[in-house]
Amino acid sequence: MTSIRHHIPEDILASYVSGSLSYAFSLIVASHISLCKDCRARLETHEAVGGGLLEATKPAPVSADLLDNVLGALDAPFEAPRTFARQGPLPGPVVEALGGKPPVWRSLGMGIGQCVLQRSKNQSVRLLSIPPGQAVPDHGHRGLELTLVLKGAFSDETGHFGVGDLEVADEHLEHTPMALEGETCICLAATDARLKFNAFVPRMLQPVLGI
Amino acid sequence: MPAARRSPLKPETGLDAVSEQTLWLMAVRDRQDRQAFVNLFDYFAPRLKGMFIKSGLSAARAEDIIQDTMLNVWRKAHLFDPHRAQATSWIYRIARNRHIDVLRRENRPLPEELKIEDQPAEDASQIVALEMETEKLRSALMRLRPEQRELVEKAYLGELSHSDIQAETGLPLGTIKSRIRLGMERLRHEMKANTAS
Image 1 (cartoon, each protein chain N blue to C red):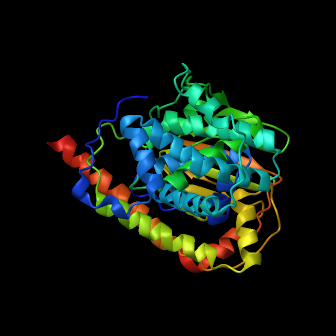
Image 2 (tube, chains in turn purple, yellow):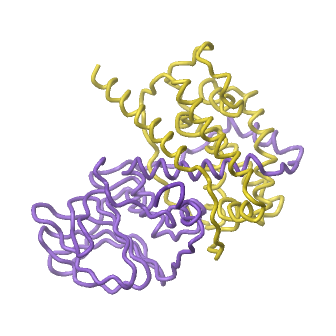
Image 3 (cartoon, rainbow over the protein chains, first blue to last red):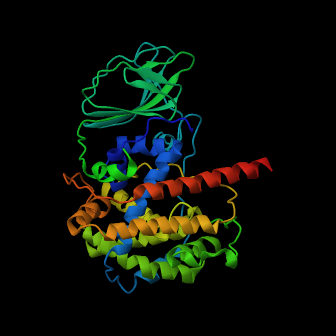
C-alpha cells in the first residue's frame, strides 16, 4: 500500500471533488483513494478549501420550522445505508458496484476475462482479469482511459504498474499492457469519451503542490 | 449511533485553540449532545442555504438537502476525526456529497471510510495544528482577488458541470496536505502499537 507510485492526476481529483466526474471515473477515483492514504489526504485538502468557502458564505435565513423538523427526525428509526467492505483485492466501492456479489467473468479470449460494471454510450467501467505474461491487445478507446491495478501488476511502454497504481491513457497513447509473470493481474478500467479536462484547478494548484 | 469508544479529552489538554464548531461536533460524536447539535445547525444551516442557492438550487430544494445533511451529520458523527478535518470541512463534504447524489439521482462512488475500531486518545496538539493550517488556507482564500475567488467558488460550490475557467492562485494547500498526512500516520502508528500490546 505504501508502494503506490502512480496517483490520481490533480485535474481528475479536482473534478471528483466538484462532482463533475462521470460514474465510471468516480469509481476509479474512489477505489484508488480507498487504497492510497496520500490521495486521501489530497482529497481532504480539497474539502478543506470547500469548507473555507462554506464558512465564508453569506448566511441565508432558513425557514422557522427547519430546525424542529431536523430535531424531530433525530430519533426516528432509520436504515443505515449498506456499506461494502473490501473483498480480497476488490476495494469497497468496487464491491458496492457489484452489489456485494463476486464478479462474473466473461471471456474475451486469450484467457482474459472481463466483468462490465457499467456501460453507457460514452462511458464504461469494467474489471479485467489478465493471466500472467499475457498481453492485452489494443482495445481502441476513445477519450481518456483510466486503469487501476487491484492485483498483480502490468507493464507497458510507459512504465510498471503495481497494486494501487493508476494509469492515465489518452487516445493518442498506443500501448500494449502486459501482465507480469507469476500472478493474474486484476484491473479496474474505465473510459469516458466525452471527457476533456480544463486546466483551471491543476494550474491553480501547481505552485503549491509541486506538480 | 454506536457509543464512542475513544478516550474523552481532558480539559487541560489545551483545546481552547480549537474552533467551537469542531468542539460542538466532537460533543455530538462523544455524547450525542443535542445542544451542541443545535449550535451546529444554527451556524451551518444558513451558510449551507447560502451555498446551495449560489449553486442554483431553489430555497425549498436547498432546505431539503440541508435537512438531509444535518441528519447525516448526526448519524455519521462517530466517523468524525478532528485530526484529519475541521468540522467545517467535514460538513462541506457531507453536504456536497448529498447535493451531488440528489442532482445525479445516483449514489456517487465514495472511498471506503477509514476504520479505526479502537480510536486512540485525541491528541490536542495535532488537532490544533490542523486547525492552524486550515486557518492559514482560509485567510489565503479571503485574500484572493475577487475574480479568482469567484472561480474557486465555482469549482467547489458551483453547478456540477465542466467549465472553461482558468486561474492561477497561490493557495497553500501543500501544508494542510502534509498536516492531514501526519495525522493519518500518527493514527496508523498508534493502531500498530495498540495491536502489538
